[in-house]
Image (cartoon, rainbow, N blue to C red; front, side, top):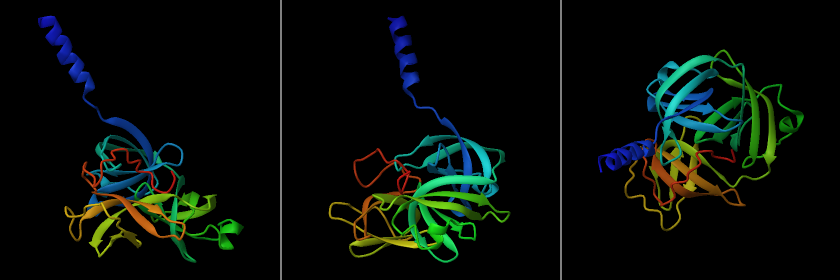
Length: 241
């Protein structure tokens, strides 16, 4: 009987999830909300909550020990700088563009990329279009800015994306404001927002219609395991990562 109890205790301990180790390059830092956006495997981007956010910079290579939260972001227990990258590569949803910059939603973060003379000719001529999935290769500048090398269209349309920012509640809509832009997102019937209030830091997942309109699929606070629906499979890879 004692042997059986010991085996049960050991078996239960093995089921307790442990923090996973990952590595990547810093794409964006938000010290006020303790968030770091990393491009990790391939072109994938993920958001990490870290007390070390104020001490890291764009372009630094880091290793991180973290656990996944229900909203697709990660809670980092350790983050260590191990080097520096001069180039970065990531994929996401093109939210907006101007003559001077691209704004791309990737893993929940809105990544700002300076638009320079090295941009491909197709991009200078007007492509990619807002709402498309893009692949971005960029150079890390000395001022923590990203300067575009090549921005290419992966898909002319994107099924949706993710954005992290401050919440404003409207009538039938919400607005999520990140550092560089605000998105107005329609709220369909059936999503309960009574647990949220003005100014909350949230992560919003959304789909994109053929007309370019955005519809909310899930909303959670940035450090919360609980979502507004029953789907716990959030991929945290906004915009087709």
